[in-house]
Length: 355
Image (tube, rainbow, N blue to C red; front, side, top):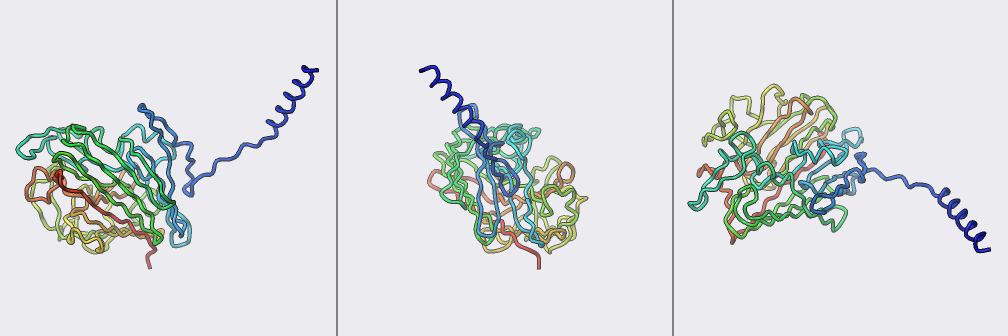
């Protein structure tokens, strides 16, 4: 009798399991599957895909590694939602750490000549990863690090990272918080806050690659660009500033009015913004004539690094930040963060439709 009961129970369970339907995973508006971003690091931390949405249907996704923006969806002039930030559809390409797509870069964004600077009469040697120079914090800069992310509501992500004293050669234990806020006016607000227990240098930014015609667009020639700057910092061949500040007028670097993007020039330079610290003044504007999408950038930073990717995936990088190699140029705005100070910086990317 017991044997018969066991057989009946087993058959019932089998029938019940066969009757269950697998629940399909819900993709984000950008078509991403969160499960493809699940990854456990060597330290046991789990990478996730976080999603922010606003009342207008705009969506931004972010992952723990590098606190990277993976996608950013905005409406075009026909009402179609378009992803205007370059990224990948799974975690694997991000683990190769060959690029900076959407990443927070630091401890020092941009370059430091010869991987060396002097602070309070002490010479510091940081890790070189672009020839003799340091780029974006070194080979294991913030773009490669795991950020702890909290999501208090659907429109806010609080990303935290503790950078230990000596990491990549930089002095001081640094506590960094990057807060992404997706506002209902279709603006992505990014607030940076940092403290240290020892004098250090800090230059932090987001390295998103934008194509306002869509992430899969093959050109940027349909873009217009404006940078609110009359001057720039000229560089040597290795892109280290000479220390001079020169005018952009009558050069291919002049975007002081909204004009067609020159896709033939190899842009990778720092603009000296006309109104540093004025968060209510447009620092840069980009417009796609194909989709009508426009992006205004506001920032408290004094500089704007403009890089044009012309080959692999045509796009623009506009990084609000302090100047490259500032620790080695006393005439540049200081990037020193001291024990009794708090680093605060704000950048806003506001999206709309060209009228």
